[in-house]
Length: 234
Ligand code: UDP
Image (cartoon, protein in one colour):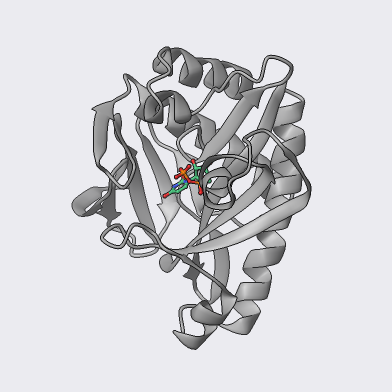
């Protein structure tokens, strides 16, 4: 597999073409941003840990029948994935009240929701990922009705599977973000699943083991990623 040109650089990853038009390489950086990139920093070895954590989680989801873009991990920082035509929507799934939900509705963080909440945001850094709903997505032609139903079903299924996966590792899956795309007409789960994109709290102590340690200057940021990596990959 020959690595070609970088064709996209995001906040946490660089995407490279390969000699196979169906496959690309996802390179994980240590760069961290928060609050729409107003806060910037690095988390040492984050890219290595997120690559490994995402590999384990994508493999687990695949074995449970969830189609993901994952093909194989190539090395410490690179993963071979299917090239997706990204649907410009971030899907957020919530099990507990936290982050922007707590802020938006004036609710205290940590409250348990009686059932999971699914939210959609338009994937646009310049607009700060504004919240939208399924009507926007259909009316603007970002996904079809059928694709939206598939994305919703997959998101709830991924939530049930990951909640249980993390629970067995003594972690609560508070909320997380998913991205989907098309590949030869089928919907696949893309991007990454890691402490950058999930809120994970230690059961009992409720200690935060995710990117909120960076966002909120809580210290021990690297330790939190290492701990999640140890529990997920260990
Ligand atoms: N999230 C993400 N990327 C984004 C926005 C959110 O990965 O651009 C994740 C975030 O890590 C959290 C969940 O989605 O696990 C819900 O985030 P929230 O809406 O509470 O926003 P935030 O608190 O990050 O502003």
